Amino acid sequence: MAQQNWTVYLSGEIHTDWRERISDGSKGAGLPIDFVSPVTDHESSDDCGVNILGQEDNPFWKDHKGAKVNAIRTRTMIERSDVVVVRFGDKYRQWNAAFDAGFAAALGKPIITLHDEGLTHALKEVDGAAQAVAETPEQVVKILDYTITGKL
Image (cartoon, rainbow, N blue to C red; front, side, top):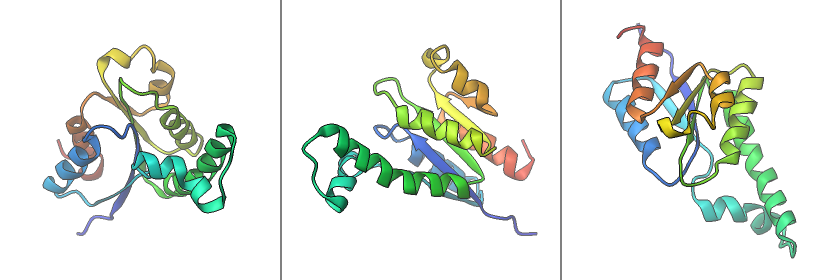
């Protein structure tokens, strides 16, 4: 019997290879998953609003336009996803990832948070909304594998 494809949204930190590790590990396990994510090119994400809708002199309005345009993609993909994985890195503040986790939780989407042990205290409320808290991309793959196949 063929398994239904799952859609997994990968949110958060864009400066490491965690997305590729999850995607490659899932492919290696033969999992029926389509991965989606926000725009991970930092410059494109920051500049989309003004490049599409017009320049702004005030940095607040530049960021506002970009955030609104990016939210179209983010909200649509989270709504269509079966599971949301939210990665918090230790070098950069991922406020957008915290928003994505909150939005996913409000929609009742299962959430897996991914972060180093050193961020456990800082993220206790976010982790409290998650169904699982992982410290490595490989643990995320194992969670997805078990969730989809029911096998350890």
